[in-house]
Length: 356
Image 1 (tube, rainbow, N blue to C red):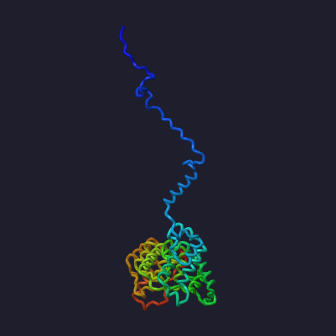
Image 2: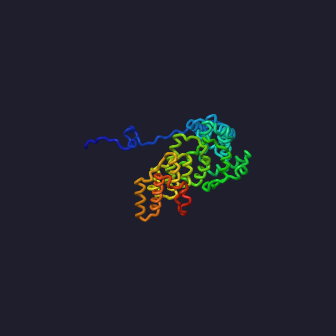
Image 3: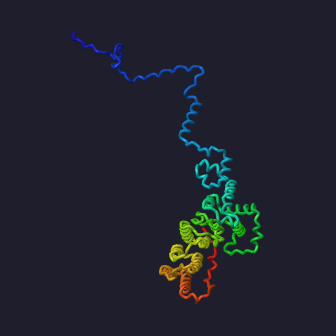
């Protein structure tokens, strides 16, 4: 009988752990936690979770300053009394606490009273006071409607007899809009060094912006010298107004010292397609500039070339421009031959509001 080799059978109880087929596949049983004693709190208590979140939020959020921790009523009182226009820019929290129509009105009265008033006071406003007033007028809330309402309320508060004092004054037909408010602003005697805000010198040029700018430069003869940086903004805004055919703002830019030259006339003719109302206004300002020594080259080849091309295409502005260039060139070369009151008639159809 053949000898047999003994072999281990599967499932034999005395096999080692490594020899069993299911070694390494058994799940480890989690030990059952011991029951909590009565009165002990679990680590997953909702109150503890909320407290932990609060601690994390405190670590992530910056701490509030002592000023931000003040009650809103006290903070608003400090804002008005200090007349610090830049205070809302310090933090979003302060900006949210210092936003209200009533607060804007009080702040405007406090800031503007330092740059308006008697003739013995307003010319001597400090640089800081003038900067605060300019910063205030440049704010988003300081619209033309807000400015008119404030002027009316301020005149009533100061008990000024504007209607009696200005009863006989007749404003030019150009500035008859909002005549009452403009005269009241003059009677508030603003400082001659108070210049219009920069936002009025930039496009888009709406009718409200044109009226507000006109009001602020109405008494332009008393305006002080313009700083060089501001003069550059005025000249750049003048060019933008020409490109946008904003006829209602051109005279105001002229009062602020904007100069008309040949280059700007080319912009009005070649780039802005010769809006007759714009070119006519530039011509009037060019005559005043000629008296001050700023001449326009009315024989400029580019201007004449545009006029000739427009005439060939049958465009009426081309013929009108040629007549204007010829007359102005003749006036420059032969001033005694023309009367001072001679003017080129402006066609009535172009006397409409060209504001965007």
